[in-house]
Image 1 (tube, each protein chain N blue to C red):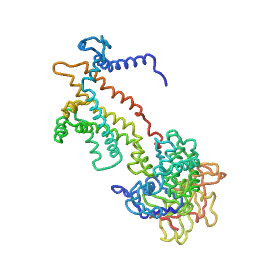
Image 2 (spheres, chains in turn green, yellow):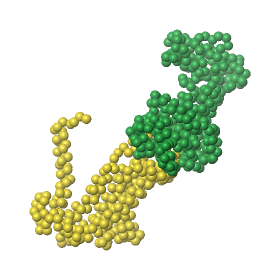
Image 3 (tube, rainbow over the protein chains, first blue to last red):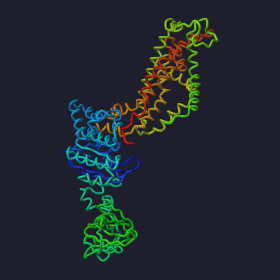
Image 4 (cartoon, rainbow over the protein chains, first blue to last red):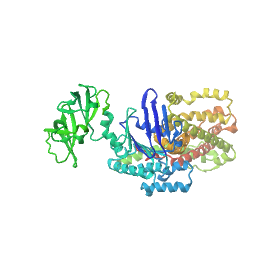
Length: 357
Length: 277
């Protein structure tokens, strides 16, 4: 069992820059947890605190039931994959991978066996004697992965490992890391700013912003029930559409958009300012039928992707994006009418950005 | 690569040749003088190999003069300065490059400032310090002064080189199982070999050919280093130019050899491929 538990963890840099603000996360054994957020949100700092590369200002981190606040990185039984690979340039691929094991005084046979095994998994067998400078970006990334997996640590830490690769290689490596997770049965903590990576890889996602944890949930839960405006806007591509409106006689009202609210949503009475969020795929082409909401605007731009088309529609001051079937006959500059199921909308309090359920 | 036109290349080679001649001519003269027999020392002949050329000056140098003693003294002092200089500069440069501490900038600037004073100006205070510490006429005193004068350059060189090495390499090493020191020793130090070699060469050179300080610190002729020894051939009534020239040539041999050997370590691109820039 290698649980990683962060309790009220703070990182305050000299002066008063708070990089991590009361972070509480429980990472269970064998979980694939993704820390995601825009740059500067504190996700890397949090990961580095787990690694022991940054001191913790306040709070407590335990790995496998043992408090590690003052334990050196080498004694935490973790392995880390860095964004810039951080391979040892003067060592061959084999030496790079064997380095950690050698330092831990593993017997030679064991080291060779583990390196060979990792090289096979990562298809690096024919590169073992090369220096990092003779490798391509993808190969270097795999060596960095190999260096981590030969150690068989309790916890793997990944710090944006794919952000330096081109899009195609990134997709490929993403799949490799997921396979690796299944094969190794290990706890993985993965930092990324890419919400697609987070959604596809994580079994649990921690969304952070300004050092604060916004929401911790499984990907689908995060997608369907974001707790606040930030999470709603951050997760999903194209991003969720937001329409500002108010409560009028028990219904959400914003220009031509109007639909009835549930009792919980009505709380706060008339004229309360709300933000309605709706995902692009929940906007359906065509006029509203009984009970559904309606949204009208002017089509300004279309992005046909083949399997679907993104329509950019001007609604009052705002632009919304709808994901429609490729056979929809839209006209640029013409009126577009969409309907939607009110149950598929997300409502947020405009005052504090929190979701109203 | 496109070649320059012939005329331009000829011109470049001609200019280079002139400079080579300017550089090499004095050395050839010294060589020529060292071969002269005693009766031709003041000859104005420009012949590279003089009439009646003889190795007798070299023989006399090693057999009748304490030249080997001076050679040993110089070697000892220079190696000690090199080892001390490289050790201190590599660690001090690392600390300045990697750690934030109060007075870091001030330390860097004061190190630099010491370089602005001419050595002769520091001679008197240095002499006073050395004599108050009872280090006059000791090798240790000489080594301390040489190391101290070589350090600023060495520390700055090392610091600059460490700055080019990404910190994530040490972090990776520390996660892999190193502590601070072993990360430095096993991962960083091998990557700064060129800077270590430059630092070493500089320390060695500054001790090997130094005269002024040695002349103040050392008084016992058996402790003389090579530059002091050579100066002995220069006397008030006559100068033994043949010996002087032969000695000068022998003194320069180890330095040339050292440069040739060190050359192979002075390569770039050691850190290539380690990190994505």
